[in-house]
Length: 88
Image 1: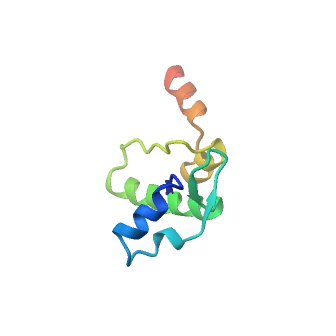
Image 2: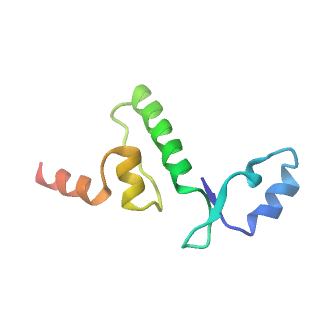
């Protein structure tokens, strides 16, 4: 879902038939290329739903995503989940 900008020419050279690097990527605040946020959230929702169907007890973690993405894609924010785990 993200990559460093320096990887783009490497991806193009190694996988010339791939259209991935021409997708809807934008430069994030961290300087990495990411799918546009609404698209990323939709993809995460689909992936999380598929994972939960097959493995409902597996913890899904969104590395380097903000609270808004967590809430939209998984229905909770990491800080809320940690607080609930310590309260239970």
